[in-house]
Length: 101
Length: 101
Image (cartoon, rainbow over all chains, first blue to last red; front, side, top):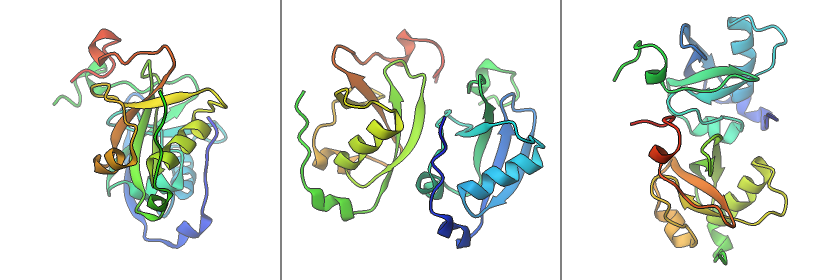
C-alpha cells in the first residue's frame, strides 16, 4: 500500500493522543502524534519495528488511514492497529474474548 | 448509471470523512471529501481504478448515492461501497462473517 503522507506543515499542529495496538491486540500503547507521519515514526520506534514496512488501520473496523487529512479528522484516543504485509484486520470477536462487547 | 455530479462550488465546503470499501469488503479506506465529485476522484486514485467506471452505494443497504445534495446529507464516516458494472451490493451476512454485529 502506498502511503500518502502529505502536509508536513501539519507537524506544527496540536499533538493528538492516539492508542496503538498490534494485529493480535496483545499490545496497546498511548502515543502523542502531531501528524500521521509523526505517528508512523513513533510507532516504528515504540514497537521497535526497525525497517519492517507497516500500515495503520482503525482498530474498530479496519479502515486504512493513509492520508494526513483523514488522520486529522479522527477523534482523540482513536485506536490504531499496526499491520504488516500479509496481516489482515479482524474484529475482536474472531480473536480472543479479550475485548468482548 | 449516469453520475449526476453537480455544484462544484461545494468543493469549498468542509471536508467530510468517508469510508470506502470494495464490493467484497476486503478493503476499507478513510478518505476526506469536499463533495461527491471529490470523493469520486479520490476513490479512483486511492483504489487505482484507472478509467474503469464505477458508482457508489451505501455499504449498509446498497442505496445508490448519485447527487451532491444527498451526499451532503450523509453523516461523517458513512461507509460507501464502490461497485463496477455488473457488481451488486450484498449484505455483509451473505459474505463472510467479517463484519458481524
